Length: 324
Ligand code: UDP
Image (cartoon, rainbow, N blue to C red; front, side, top):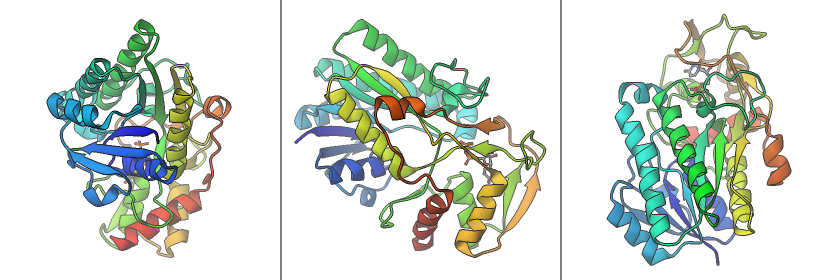
């Protein structure tokens, strides 16, 4: 049985990957400090509660488990917070990745899957965004992830046997089809989560950030990908590395997008609740359109999305949200 060491496996995205790995028969060890994750979210394998800054604890967990590959999700991910507290982001996202790679080197581990983000592109020069475009992040969150990607690239050039896959996520949403796990981070500011919490009555109205963009309805467009499709992409990536695939970077998105207004309308339809919205000014740092060119991951990793359907994405997120 293949063993995978998963940092951040108790968080929103990590827990869906742990589930997918477990369902496929992998032996999983989640390493998480539970700062934003939850013990109940780890559906398969064991949970080691520890901080990535604690190198001795990480080393001990890895030495005991002896994984075949490492998947690294543990990170700080709130963009506005990264602007206010950049050191936290460079420490948690860049330095902790470096620490983990150090330990992998010491322990002779050579396969690494990195949780990256479309934020490394910043305001893209053209749409759809492909992996060869220059990284040009516009906030410390994106920069902290870009720096980790640079380290990975240099490492794989320096050592023939070290191989990694970096997956750059677009807008991840939705929840487990059985409603066991989902976005549980209370402070989440993501559009779909906020819309559903507004439908539930947690907020009086949903703010629409900017209606004067150069898009057909004036609002920003994003490529929303279901978290279970993202999990499949990770399974494909780890299989690829195990079978000897070379280091590479892949976008994770569907290759088309929806505007904020389209998301709001779909959320109203799915929930049957005509929640209120308020049109406000633009949110700082928002690119107008962010859509992945996802042809590379389909071609190289043979990834086939199963849930490319905004209604389904919102429906699974709603089932999850209602239970909370
Ligand atoms: N958005 C919005 N109201 C909200 C949250 C988000 O209008 O309460 C917009 C945001 O400005 C962006 C899009 O929805 O255009 C997606 O934002 P989100 O924070 O979900 O993801 P991001 O693309 O920033 O990673």
